[in-house]
Image (tube, rainbow, N blue to C red; front, side, top):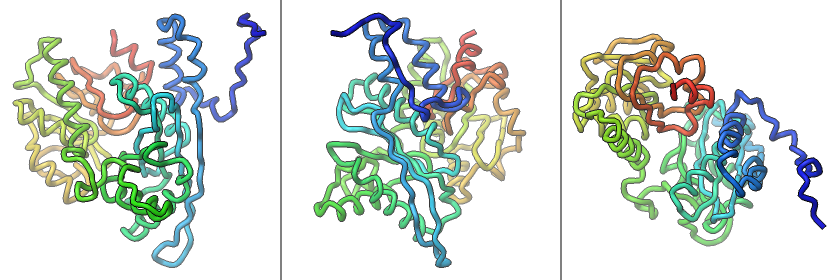
Amino acid sequence: MSNTNDTLVQHAVPSYLQADHLGPWGNYLQQVDRVTPYLGSLARWVETLKRPKRILIVDVPIELDNGTIAHYEGYRVQHNLSRGPGKGGVRFHQDVTLSEVMALSAWMSVKNAAVNVPYGGAKGGIRVDPKKLSRGELERLTRRYTSEIGLLIGPSKDIPAPDVNTNGQVMAWMMDTYSMNTGATATGVVTGKPVDLGGSLGRVEATGRGVYTVGVEAAKLTGLPIEGARLAVQGFGNVGGIAGKLFAEAGAKVVAVQDHSGTIINKAGLDVPALLEHVKKTGGVGGFAGAEALAKEDFWGVDCEILIPAALEGQITKDNAGQIKAKLVIEGANGPTTTEADDILAD
């Protein structure tokens, strides 16, 4: 016989879920707590939302080009699979943590449910700086990681995709490795693979185009004309770069851009095609001839109508939210705004 007395209901929280509230997982938990009062009878599922279904931590050893063996820590987290197979990217970054991957997987659950697609939420990553690896080392890393998480992924189980520092080539390696390990070609094990291997046309630009589309609709609702609007973009890769290009083509001016290589500004408007070519050649916006350098901390206070955070999570915080002058903040990254910053921006 069940007892519904709340004082008798125990929710033992595993130690790995007790994340620092300043971290990504803590930010996600705060978001869940904020919406709980509005869930009505569905609030009984809140504890489920706060617990990933499955967490896999793997050691990824590879032989480097110099003959030594290096070990990297990898993750695959399945937050919820109630709506279908897990869906979420794989990122390669030196600052990847379990807290981050847990939060990203949870946000994937929410996003997939919000747009009513039949997928659950998952995410993966390796704590590595891929820029320090040769192409051969990167391939060996990808293939070993795929083999280690192979027991979780599959076309009907969990489907990885590109994310930070991963691309169609990485997805091709993952697909090939999984197919070899299972004994049959499985093109559906990943999305974001090259078109020649069954990938989708427009996939590379899809997220940036989505940011642009949402921005245009939000601008209509607020009465903000895109023509002549000033943009500041953090992150200028597949998301920020594409969004910036589309906004510029619509008549907006990209006046400031920030990424890992530096922060640049041109109040008259940056030459976006030239900047994209510069990024393609050098790997970042730093040193672009058509702009002046700007201090990293001054980026958030740039005069603009639209701000697009399209880099990593937790970038807009209580410490810099008050500097933002933009009328619209269009999130292109996963969880770029903390809950404390949300309160400041709402004012």
